[in-house]
Length: 112
Image (cartoon, rainbow, N blue to C red; front, side):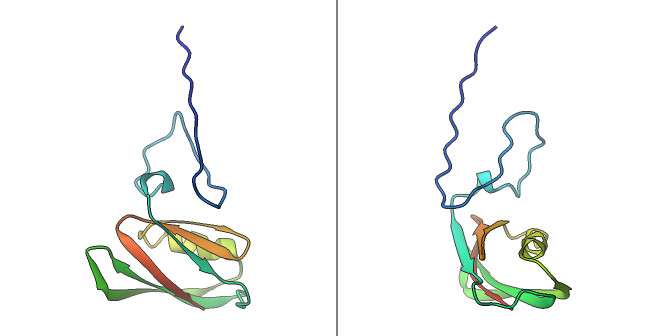
């Protein structure tokens, strides 16, 4: 039997989930991205409000797109789950900061 040695390094400032063996390929996984954006929501009232994210495509950075979330969300985890459903990257959070990982889109702002 051969041994497999593996060293994984997190080069970000946020704790990120990772699956190494026995997982299905996920194209929305953060491990496929090398660009990150962060949104500091400190001071924002996050309790059951609607929100939107402004972003642009890397191929057309001067055009701002907006994705609206029209259902009130009570927690920051809910915001992250909703953002992950948008298909524009992988989102996670630490405290009041939401992190976006994407190679195809540029995160501009989150509006509460």
